[in-house]
Length: 259
Image (cartoon, rainbow, N blue to C red; front, side, top):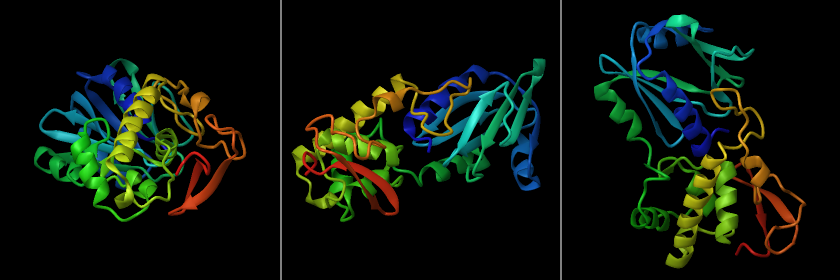
């Protein structure tokens, strides 16, 4: 579930660990322990994010790349019954990586390989220019919701924010991406920036498992425009919000004002 705003918030919290040395690590599986064991004795030099990925830059040209997937989250100095990795620091501080559904991706790569990992992603949703966004979208024949969620096109938007963005832009989620006019594409682009930045301000959405690294809930769920509001009145036209499936994902929209 963590999408760009949630991962942005996680990364911001993890920056409190910059210049701290990892003294030891624990993992619940030998295969994961083999991955993270090389981080022992390494100092965290920087924390970055691209799309839904967190990148911890370590000394000696190593990078720890973590994609939380559905339920991954970091907790600072807190244990969790779904903990998968624990990074121990000096002075008894520790960082837990918890993952209830165990889908998260965790890789440790050298400097010459990190670019290859990140090049699989499109440009970050907050960094992409409108010109590039437009050219990418109109080259696709799939439904616009599917295209917005394609991490190889634009990195960071998932199911929740795709619904929110398309509602704000007044675009039906089933519209073919290559059928959209330049004006409609600009509306989507501007809505994407507005929604993501608003959610970042509110520290993300905590509908299910997501918490920030200090264990606090996000607040965007209290400001949702359309996602999860099936049967409720549309905030724009008062018609009932509908739910359908697109590419096996629940999709929420207003049939009257999204065309």
